[in-house]
Image (cartoon, rainbow over all chains, first blue to last red; front, side):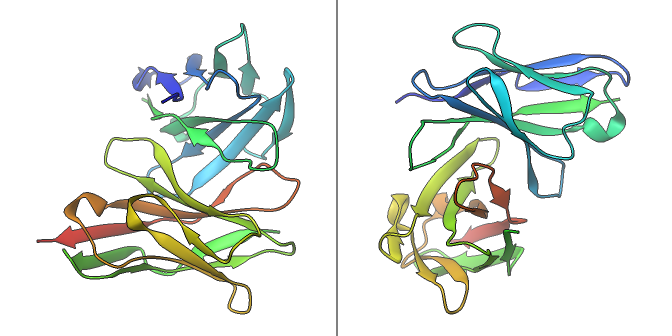
Length: 114
Length: 113
């Protein structure tokens, strides 16, 4: 069964460093998403991406964040200058076009900023 | 604006007894509603979804949920709990024309032998 994959599973970085979180969505999906979950808090929407551009983003998704689909399979989330409060589990998801809108999630990347 | 409230942060049941996880939603539109499950160290898996068809929705692993517009509820149930059901459960809402998912805080389900 097709699945969304994410790498790495755990990333530790120092405050101020840049990190790139990688995702491989399901191959025939056209919409891609990033969500995050800070420990003990709700899962929060960050951004959605379609047709090589951002279709929606949340207030959290400020200038330090960017997304990219560098090739036909990968979807990345870059955090330019990490802060302590960026420590969270980051989930990638993808969905087909069409009315079902069902989003399939990857296993997540745990980002720890020290 | 859409939102969901999961009424219990933690539920504990005995194996073989019924499960009830409660969720109320708020939406100015006819909502799409979902339940996701997260097992320890695993990703988020869709259990079931309501998208304006039948109000009683059946999902995987014997779970089902009933959409009640009059009560703005979408409670998740299972007749008989298994040990493998122990996990975190999330109620999620999305408004029409909007792909963003809005999540509840989650309910941790413990199943005791």
